[in-house]
Image (cartoon, rainbow, N blue to C red; front, side, top):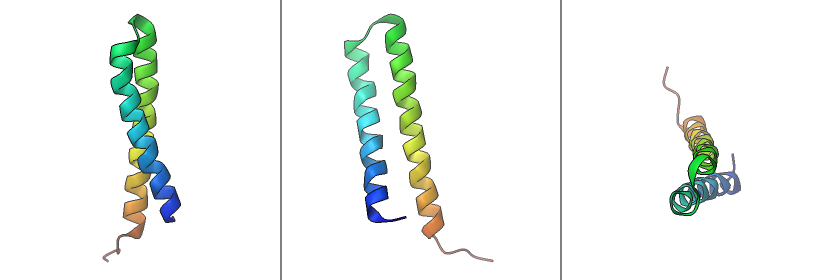
Length: 62
């Protein structure tokens, strides 16, 4: 994976965390729960992508 992909994943993670914090103050009730779950899932997906990229670059020991 190239540097652009890693930068996009880091930006996606940062935006999802910021959105989750913002939603705690802006939304109410069921809407807050649903949007928070979606932004949390987006953050977990970005984090998983970053872990996969890091593991694919690490040297494999046999």
